[in-house]
Image (cartoon, rainbow, N blue to C red):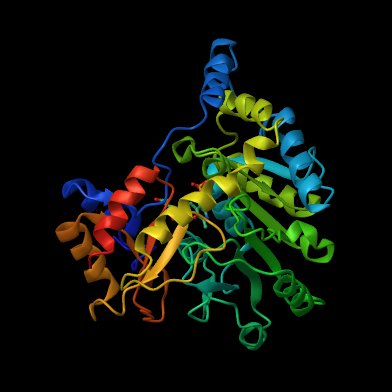
Length: 378
Ligand code: PMP
Ligand code: GLN
């Protein structure tokens, strides 16, 4: 067999979740909520099924859902996405990301991304013959060095992938960052893929800087998002992509032959559920409380941290605990101490190992307290 992805093996999320299960460890590795989705939403799904909404949805998604998502984005970010032509409902953000990359990246195209980067970007670029150009984020606060981006932009640069709030670091892009990016790509044909799956999970009164807030940037951008993150049902694999009309038309050419359309009864339920903005506007406070339970639990221990500004992940530095590399330490922590996490070096390509682990705090307070009682003793 000639592998199209010779350097790819099983994802770290699968590896660490399995290790956690095999060793009966508290699983703070793979990012998913350890509690149920709102019963109201679950009831809406079963109602849609009972009401007979069980056949194909329109290719781009149910009109009511497209309208309610565009209304949400346009209200929050002052944009004017048209629900008829500028949005597609997808099977999670993963399918949206894969579709954007497949629709636009061809042999030899360079795609700039920032490491540590979420793991699904690079394989999609490679499968389409593109060349990933990895730029390390600068630790300890994982900021983008825009000077370096400027240097790495070449005539072959086709796309830049950004992700704010950022997985795994929990940092966010500021208004200034996006204005600088806007300026950097002015007078180029570079597209932006803005992965905003954690848009509603942002802390300490900070504001999510969606590319939708910046009209000049938005005209060359795709925004990908995930209902799974927002409504605590990652297993439903529902998300969406918005982009200006001409870009969305190309996206849909791929989408219609990839999945054609996605789960219809869930689309009905989400359309209704989105009518109440509280269902997503309360998420930041909900998760900030969990972040603080987790951080208070390890305060005063050997772990070092900068509190996450967004996402449901917290990075912890273990440099005061051991010299081991992060993969070995994450495995030992799971097997010997019964707490599973994600080693962050696997999201980097340049051999960077800043000796930090990623912990998911989308868990009950009881689980978080159990985990921190173990962690603080190390
Ligand atoms: N992008 C990022 C940054 C993510 O963290 C995730 C999921 N954890 C995704 C995309 C994929 O989202 P989905 O589960 O909706 O496919
Ligand atoms: N996005 C989730 C995370 O970062 C994992 C999703 C997956 O397992 N592919 O943990």
